Image (cartoon, rainbow, N blue to C red; front, side):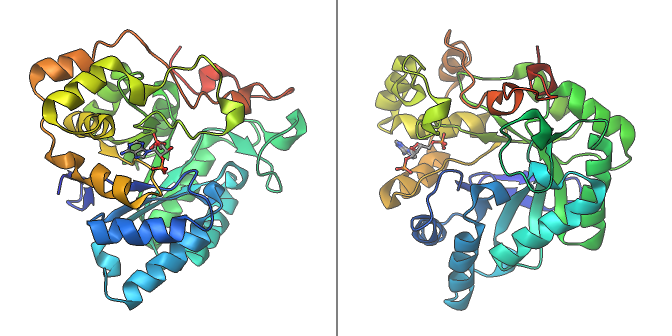
Length: 318
Ligand code: A2P
């Protein structure tokens, strides 16, 4: 199994099961199918609102002897409404209670955006906390405390651009160990990827298949469909594999962890088998030079709310 290695020697299986958009009623079975197929990495988050059901599946898997806790790598993420330094522990408490675990392997700041504690998704300017009210360095101190306590074995961030990573690196001796970012051939983010690699920050690619099931509010008629890309389809045909498998293999070839989401048993199994797909230099060159470039998860749901103190430049390279 492909692995990524942390600076202390701990390893993380490169392919994980994504659980964003996995509906309650579906994710329990999806987790069990994934464990049976060989997955040993699950990607979770409080805001997915399904961690309790993921936890039920883990509890069953441990009880049935499918897998032991120490054999599986669990990531979760701090939601935006627990960014104050003193609130981070409470955010992790809720996740650990739902997942029915006493530690996560990796805990990430989900977004560099802070909300008031009673707000799940912002609707107006008053729902936010600004950087003056909730500094990222304060949130990071709260994260470091979770690592010191042992309740988060590794800590990192998600959706952080170079400027925001630099702010954390300059504010603390403890560096983020991971940046989880949208990454696929339509959004390669080469500069950010190099920045992270040079500083020993590991990367996880989210929405590796283009998240065609993202919420309707985040889709437009003319958005490109990554799984239908002609170049990806041709490479897939040449290997006798599916376009999804080519896209997962692409992330692995870039040295990233990758978390395709599926709630379908055949696709869960197929996605895990993508680690057998070996792409050659010419195929990688083609995938690295597709003219379509597109961000499927663009953060406008935080930046375009009237009165939001956050701008697109707080999220992405400009
Ligand atoms: P499903 O859950 O029904 O399998 P992403 O990981 O980029 O967010 O993409 C998830 C979307 O891709 C979901 O709609 C998921 O549907 C679909 N999907 C997952 N695996 C495959 C696959 N191997 N082939 C085609 N579609 C897939």
